[in-house]
Structure formats: structure tokens, C-alpha cells
Length: 173
Image (cartoon, rainbow, N blue to C red; front, side, top):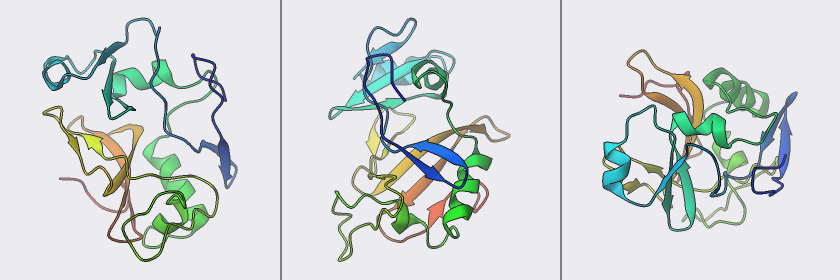
């Protein structure tokens, strides 16, 4: 799986689905993609404007940008596909530790098991004010699904437990 910059991502299998085992890297030269490190630019952008937000060397994307930046032939999983992966590995209450990277100290006595080499890092998320939240505390992965009120659905793993939070296992407020 190769991105527009020529980088090859590691992929893993859960059930009969393949998953990228790395976060998308910052990309350049993508037509119509606005790249920013400015909170005000992120906040002022229309939700239909494809945005890449760069913080601490990591890239965060809004839903409008995702389909532009995923490698050719790949797609962002739906909430149902994320739930399928979780159920193939166990259940929502225990799978988080199986997805947490062994290469990051999750600030717990036990490092992540990462049994399928998913490599989950606590990358946090960019809030609606353009501020990076929960870095080193929560891993968040966007899905292609939205809820009734238009908010994007994500799959989340917390530093504090082994639960994987997804829209099917709990409701987001």
C-alpha cells in the first residue's frame, strides 16, 4: 500500500480485512488539499474543505481530506468495519491492549501487546478549536461514518483501560 509520496505502509490482517498499521504520514502535492499548522485556519475552514493539520510532525485530516490522501485502492473503514475488526479479535472491553503499540510506553506498567502488529499510538485528536487533545493519552482513528448530527465517528483506545470505544459500543456526546 503506497501513498502519493511513494511511502509504503505496513499492513496487517484482522479477519478477512487488511488494515494499514501506521497513521497516514504528512503528504504534499495533493490537489485541493489545504495544509496548515494554524488553529484559526482549521477552525475557519468549511467542513467540505479538505484539510491536513500538522502538529509535532504528525498529520491529522478532516473527513473531506481522507479519501484524497488514502493510498490508491484503499478506503477509510466504516464504523461497521472497525467493529468487525474488534469482534474478530475479541470484544470491545479487552481488544484495546491487543492494538496498542509495543513501541510506545502507554504510561502503564504493561506495554501494549499489539498482537496483530496494528501499532496503535496515542496520537490524540484535533478538536473543533484547532487544538491537539489527548496526545499520549488516547489513540483516535477516524471512520468514514457520520452520526445523525453529522459528526464523524471514530474508534478510540484510551491510556487508562483496554476498551476500544466505537460508535457501536457506546454513544458519543
